[in-house]
Figure 1: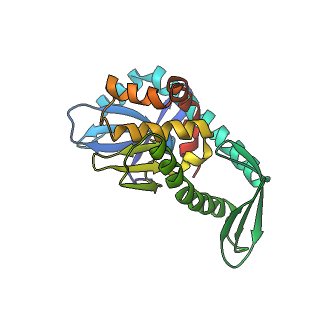
Figure 2 (figure 1 turned 45 degrees about the vertical axis):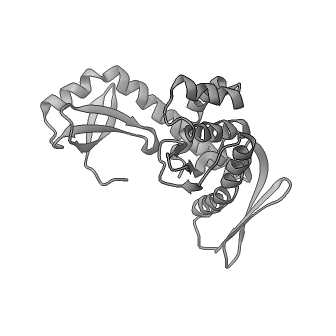
Length: 240
């Protein structure tokens, strides 16, 4: 959370919170921030007034559509947690039995069809799961990048697995660095591969030009379907 103030408005029978974000721009902007499951109102100077409220209300259809998406995402997240804490966890599209055991030291181990997460008895199980999966992501994702870099003859300077990529899966820099969102490990393997190839191709073309997409297509012919299917995974951003 950013600590920015919230304004609640009754819209369509719902009490909807809006985060007030000061802006250096000239116009009021309304955004839906999927990672934090809330709306952001970017206001020049950050001052709320009747004109700002009127602008938001003029966008009622858009607001209610995204508000329903927030509720749907929340339901998916709760279902994921119920399943995970109930002993079932999917990583990279593969289903595992999950056991959370008590131990002095926290640890994560993955076997053929079993994942074991250990931690202190007083620890919050959700925090144990988050810490274990982040550890796993930091180990596995750079290896997957290295593998695809070899297959695509792409030179990579560094790979950093981050928590801070709140609403995007990855980024690349002209210096040859790739940043990946650790939540990638919750996606199916083919989508992980596509997203890694996507960032690798940005090391050749730092844009989304036709040449960029030709490179992506060369190494991932099914990229259009995979890219479109990512919209069904936006709820993952709000899991932790």
